[in-house]
Length: 291
Image 1: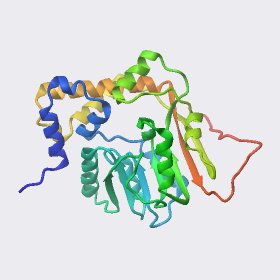
Image 2: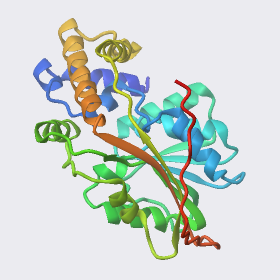
Image 3: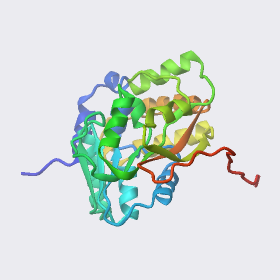
Image 4: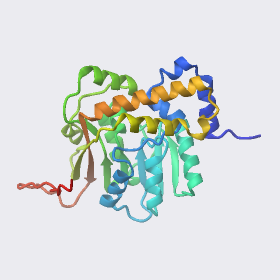
């Protein structure tokens, strides 16, 4: 008997949906069905920056919460001589991720089905826990954070990359993004997330702030075409392919506008840091303008 591949499962799921149903998909389900390479803000550069700052020891366990279709987990595993685990609530996303890792010959990685607010792991297991912006999709941010610290070893590092607002967006745009992601969208600041992830005995050891660059309509269209051109989508009828492209473009366009009001940070928290550093005269990074 032939075992169905993740792409077979996704292709069948899309084939079973009507055009109207495709046009009502939320972003997470669309990503899972298209195998869109969902990644943290800043892409691979953010992942590599986290590894540069944290430098996990050889053999130390690493966890990504909200691994989606596997981009970050696989990127980490490709740089580390350590076991890396991705956790996600979507079985189709996990299957895509596992198949991608196998194709790439990455064998120090596994993908586990589970919820970040109640993870199926024992205490004190991981030296590095990475959570991009996934916490914002969870009902209880602090409960999720408690779970992150529960599975973190003493002196381990929690690395998070939250998205927050630098300026308040128009309310119709906020509602459109909320509908797209399928969960309530709060107007949060960087300080909100620092407060969420802070705990007694935990030190904030890195805070790097970034802003987004607006994308042109042409670049959004080209990226959309690249996603719908994936091999497992080739058998879709033309009307369903068009509906899927339309849905993706809708998401990308409203997200691009929304991100013009937003920023993100790479925040590193170390549990049990031996040298807490209360600083009176704070500093900031100075960048040379090369434009």
